[in-house]
Length: 249
Ligand SMILES: NC(=O)c1ccc[n+]([C@@H]2O[C@H](COP(=O)([O-])OP(=O)(O)OC[C@H]3O[C@@H](n4cnc5c(N)ncnc54)[C@H](O)[C@@H]3O)[C@@H](O)[C@H]2O)c1
Image 1 (cartoon, rainbow, N blue to C red):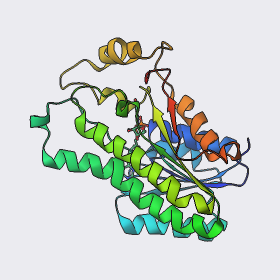
Image 2 (spheres, rainbow, N blue to C red; image 1 turned 120 degrees about the vertical axis):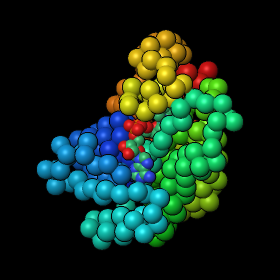
Image 3 (cartoon, protein in one colour; image 1 turned 135 degrees about the vertical axis):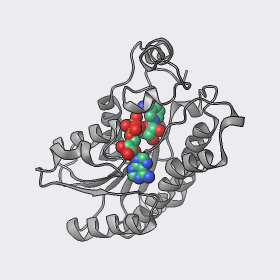
Image 4 (cartoon, rainbow, N blue to C red; image 1 turned 30 degrees about the vertical axis):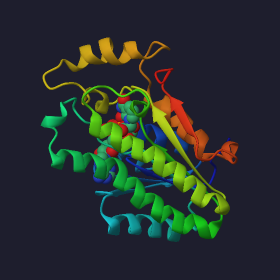
């Protein structure tokens, strides 16, 4: 399962999972283009000549166009797109969730997926080949109280990905969803109720909810993202892969 010379765009590359995805894909020989509003965590990759980064808000249509156009011009093809970006919602009752909060969550978790998949499709269709992986969340099947808008945004990612898988199948483009369980990144603590102790919540709530007995590590997610981007999954599309230590059961 090699990624040698494949060109993959990773959105949310500076995050806990995103940087693990970048690291693994580079190890496997891919050309990696990482995009994030904050690319500081990617400093270590900057000396790698197969790594290129864009810092900016991926909700900006012009930036999305530029990333894909320049990547295609640089490498001549775009084999994969991994959407690993997102924001959490602090657990709150629906009355305390403002319309602005709701829209921000939907925009960052779903509109970005629409914008990047639309751009990816326009290149991959011409190539008649491509792999798209959109990261959702186990909370779509096992919601927690108080994160209603986050769960809705991730449910939209799942439905959108399945519909797109069907639409792009005639072009040999695979679109799959990966639903992570509780993963030890800085995002996990952000799902806590305001004022709750983050370390205690991680241990007592999140870790205990995983049947396999530990929090996921970013590399656990990265390995499955790589799998879904590889030729080993040429006949897998519209699928939902739960990488969650059994949390969805
Ligand atoms: N950590 C968990 O427990 C968990 C569980 C289930 C699902 N997820 C999902 O996994 C994905 C990765 O999460 P993570 O834990 O690595 O979180 P993270 O906060 O470490 O990473 C998310 C990254 O997305 C980037 N980002 C946010 N908005 C952006 C924008 N508009 N443009 C460009 N970049 C933007 C952030 O800067 C950040 O680097 C997210 O979609 C998240 O919802 C996480």
